[in-house]
Amino acid sequence: MARIHARKKGRSGSHAINRDNHPSWSPVSSKDVETLVIEKSKEGLSTAQIGAVLRDAHGIPSVKLATNSSINGILKKNNLSSEIPEDLSNMMRKAVRLGEHLDKNPKDIHNKRALQLTESKIMRLVGYYKDNSVLPSDWKYSLATAKLTVG
Image (cartoon, rainbow, N blue to C red):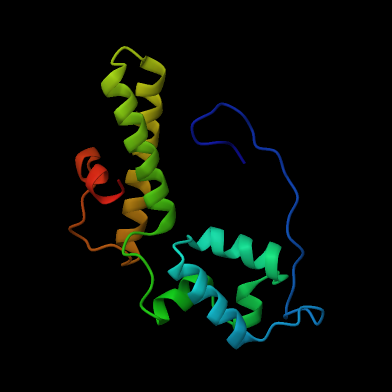
């Protein structure tokens, strides 16, 4: 499959093992996994960081197999999820950093192009999330509102 903003073909990489059920060597029950997810979320970790911590420190290969629910689903059930999806907020954070760099360095044409590409990705994500009712239909992106929202 080709890349979006590069003229290269992709490379296939390694993939996780396909599993149908929670492995027997993982000693943690589904209730314990849910409490760990809630605890790590209250510590301020993102969903990706929570998954990495559970995998590396607690030996839980898949939260979804252990609880029949994703990390985001557990957080939504306990009213701890953020209103903006994590991937969109990460892209907005990147755009804010590029915008601040361009304020200091207005002749940096390479980063100007990087900001255009990043904002293009943001617009595609926003369209996807509006179509799937994750974001409200009147939600708009701009660099100024991203600075206020993300930081």
